[in-house]
Length: 263
Image (cartoon, rainbow, N blue to C red; front, top):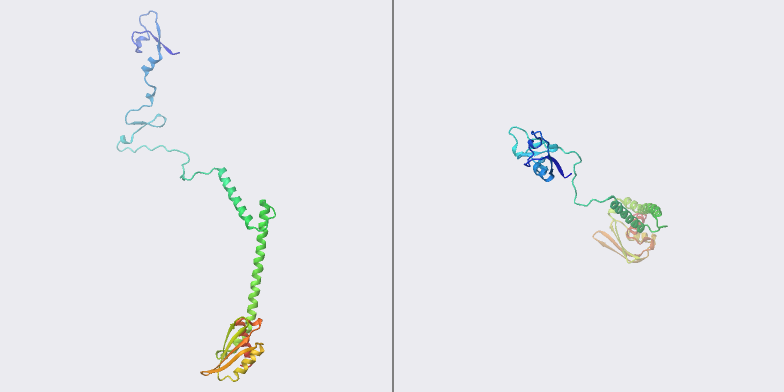
């Protein structure tokens, strides 16, 4: 119904005399329009309004404004809010699970492509076969490294055994080695220039030098002997066989032969 029942009256105000009649005769009723009633009651938002200086809090309670606190009275604590506190947010966009999974698959595919390029022989192109071929190739590489290390150790032992006689000859000469100086220099690929310097007190030095050259089967192309300040200097140019075409090896062999000739 758009109208309310009200008793008839000459005025529009809802007074108590208009509702009840004291004359004792029959009471007459009227209907009041809704717009008139709304005008009398006023706006419905009057409940939310509050007087100046008073702020309505939660559940209709009022709180004083910060400027109107009474002296000596502590300010009212702010209501605590429960729940998770928002963490620091980065400017980077948050990836979804689908996007993260897609990027992970892309990285995995790139790794498989690099592995396929590194393995020389691939039996099949599926991932399981590729991993098996890569494991086999790594095992072959490890075996090759072990083989090379063993060959290096054997070569070092052979070199040490070859240099042992020269070291023994040099150490056995002792004081005599200080008075004997031998220089060896390769000339081309098949000849060597030799210079032997000894003290004058050593007799028959040229004969002993030629005997050592003959013992090593070194044909002499040119030889000369001279005395320089109390020392005998012998120069010779000899042909060197294929097995002695090394300056250090040839010098060690000559020193060893000179020791055997009774130098």
